[in-house]
Image 1 (cartoon, rainbow, N blue to C red):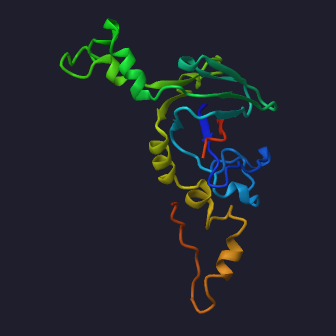
Image 2: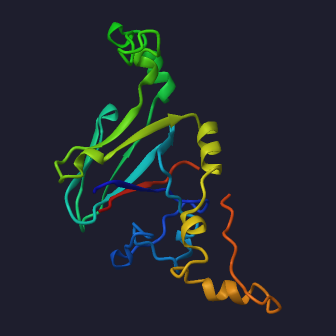
Image 3: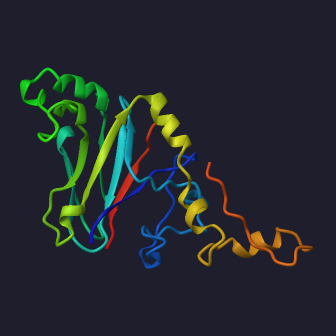
Length: 213
């Protein structure tokens, strides 16, 4: 099944290097963990971007052709195996601002769910969307993500809640290249030594999407 994998740079503002030979279930983007720039990279579950800031999106694909399509931003770029692509765009309205615009149109002043006539109207449920515009296989239907455009303050608050992927999924495991170092630093007096999981704790430089099987 296909899906978009997301990667944001961490506090250093840089994405770490990758090696396709390292791709695995626990390392879906093949990140090279000996590259310290990877250690703070984020793998968020959603796409959140600040309004009014330039965003650079780097796109790759693992083994079949996809298309990164943001219909509301009129942005469309192929994801080609072995040929990284990118584009730059600037969101001009937050999701909430766009909802207010839609609220002025009669076609959006209807119940979002016909079964609940007194529920939310269609404009209140609007979300920007990422889709795949290339018929890529049986998992094509699942290649969708919501895109949230928020204020700079909301974006920074969201970033502060994200945990680096290394901290949450790699640190202390067999894939951690620093495991031996962590064990030796844990103290020689302990009968058993094991690293504790790390607690994860400005302009968007880039976000990376990749198809995973």
